[in-house]
Length: 288
Image 1 (cartoon, rainbow, N blue to C red):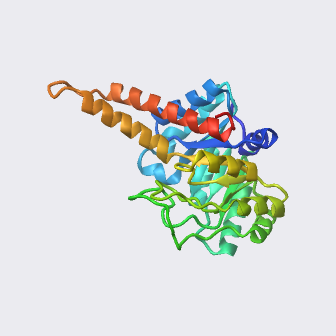
Image 2: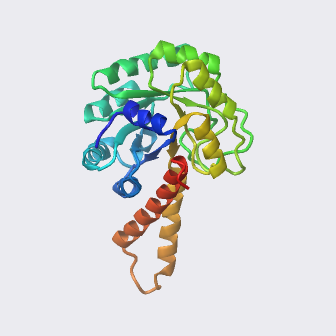
């Protein structure tokens, strides 16, 4: 069933869990995530990231995401991840997305506030919910490149006092916080500051905190993040990696004189992603 971001985060708050939020830039990813959620009977968020527009335009995947969310037997939010422009925000809202994230984290504070307030007004027209980001997780917002993690002096951790003013000024429903995670693959174990999460929750009156850069974080740190007040965890890189590993295994198993079939490869990749997503969702929901 299709629900808003606010509604699905209320479920997470009541259960004291985090809802997994997965990018689904193609049908294989989408089937893997929804299949995992339905099998585990857990709520889930499916996302279209603006940075993935070059892979599959949202004009193609967006309507499919909304339709399959409506058909699902678990609560599903269809969400925009890292929206970079208000025009793009408006486009996905018109498609029926029930949550949007406007990412103004690299902008000056006042400009970030002004744009998020505009995004909130756009979302109100359709009843959607809004996530925004305060702070910065470093250089690789898309997770692209050779990897991430380790010491990154471009990170700016979220200031809990500033977060309180930001939430009050903008009227957002969820706040993505920088507390030590980074997008992409970690080259070294991340050093997470859970006090940032606890203090943001305290100063804002309990706003749901969003954890970006979830792939590669240890099970123990996920549990600590959820206990601190994280209610949405973004996860994509490692499910994508699992699909790639399965594809490589399949191609390597094919005899030299035999063809490699895309449909077989896609089916194997989908199943590998589903297994990876299920494992992650169990951790987020404290079922592991």
